[in-house]
Image (cartoon, rainbow, N blue to C red; front, side):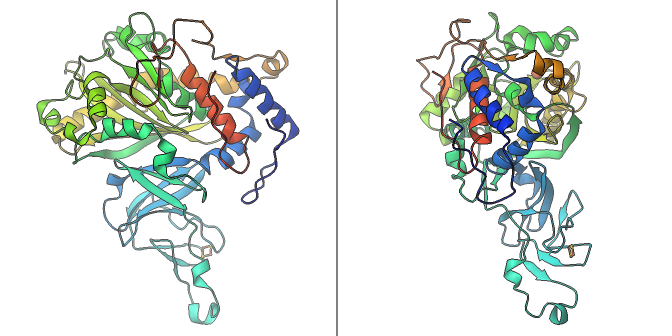
Length: 469
Ligand code: FES
Ligand SMILES: [Fe+2]
């Protein structure tokens, strides 16, 4: 499968060493048995390939439209480790501009957010419009008489698009459209975020903080890991913050299942936290009454009336959580929605980014309660977040261990594989994606790592889709 490997035709030269080609072969074979090498979470060469072939190629989330509502509004964001200015230009078009000057590479914008018609580089004062075009330089008429200014604008993402306020960009000129990339996940985004025409907005600033872990550990956890909930997060139940924790897990008392796609997107569907109809449960009438289910197809309506997605992943690194939680110990639970991004910052460091989303149709009080509830669970000091980020740190440590390598240590992804449990594909599921009968399995995680392998091992074009047999 990997004998065809050549280097990319353009872009940075990332060498694929014979050892890495061998590792790809091993991962390919072992994934079929549900096992994964710890090196996948720590290897520097693999990490360089991920930046080149995953983050510089896939559609990556960069901002919420509500963060840059006016012409000139901008925020600084990352795709992989590259910094971009996400800006609404004077014609209201969203641009994703590489924040490195075309003269000598200095960042042209050094403020996290603001409003500007132009960006002036601090080094020699080259000037760029907020659509990225080269606009001027000191002594232009004497110094740059023959400069072809059309060639010296800021580099920009070739594709930018948005869905329900979420702005994505792809750095690959050959990328499919965002809708094609999302595939069946687009259907679920309508059902989760498109419930009324007023839409949602980001509340306040996104929080960001560093975690000593590999980005894939966060991604696979939000995609499908209901199994860890009653064990890792038990203390949240013990202090009264997460009553009925077994219902949120994958065991016999849970009502969780997976929906996933071979493209590496997926979600946990949980029918145990709140009674149906889900689109009204937990939301006060002031919010629920604004939901316009006639915007949805009959199938989508049936989905939101009977099922609730509690977490999801859009490959490679955008997650969402929608669960009930209380903003204060004595307050009744509300339902919060937040976005999470695991930004890679080396093979064993993530910068976590969190945006709590509020409903534009809701009161300030409702949105503030949702914000506080989201922070208390998944903010930098959130009780669930503390649990998760501590345990994710172990994978790269094992990956760096000589003992682990020499002894052939492997991580186990066999839950639900080949009769390991009653976990199976649900033939009755009539909505997009593959649904499972329970969450006591790891088929979505295996699909995630197959997508990861296809992308990271394929130099020029997006890897072909392979399904678990
Ligand atoms: S590096 Fe930007 S103007 Fe020289
Ligand atoms: Fe967790």
